[in-house]
Image (cartoon, rainbow, N blue to C red; front, side, top):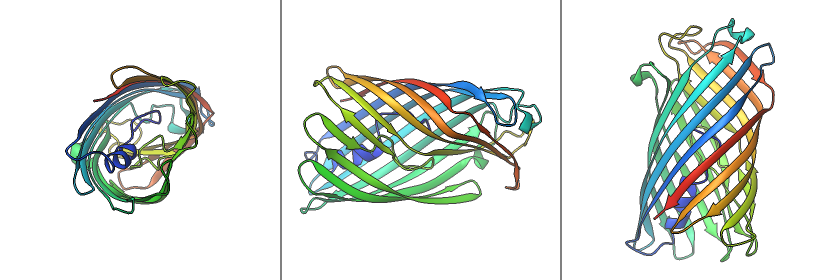
Length: 296
């Protein structure tokens, strides 16, 4: 799951809860991201190039119900240079991830929103066994529309990834501070972490400038041919903080350019029994991305 992305499942949930009955909405996004090679603490370098494709469809119905389906595919191509902590060998190569989720949202007459998002995910190094790379779980959201410009809520995610279960709480924020300023969640909450926060400024109807970030943690099954941990598990943690410039075209299409930095980066290896083998941190890494997205 990539750190730089504009369309979010949570945003769709909150929006479709107040949409007109029988309204069908589609969202698509294509996002390539480059994270530059940076030094590992124990020696060597690591970098990754990623691409994400996501799509969703949402159906609003009376009285207050909405349903939707979202899917995404991503590929991370890692490059390593003499990583000392991993015996000088690349701990993994190309990582592929895919997920599909179904959401149900109910909006009461008192403008309270209740949402459930069950999700199934595949995350593995190229060549890994598919049956050993499946995770599943759900996100639960409760939100209250406090005014025409402010919605607040809480959520919780519970996910089973291979041999590990994780759970985390998160906040839902959708605050149109005034005509130009907005504070909200930029990412969807899922196996990789909560939704984060983004503050944006819109000087015109078409242009937008924003800053935000969120904690991300991804786990994936390794190939049986992996040189360091055959059939094991890899993990990538970091805190991406970004600046975004967006332009909205017509009808419903937009482009967003990102400049970011990944803080507190960590790479970790486990064997096929779930025991820790090795881990290493990397220096703050520069990141750049561009997202092409549309709603229709």
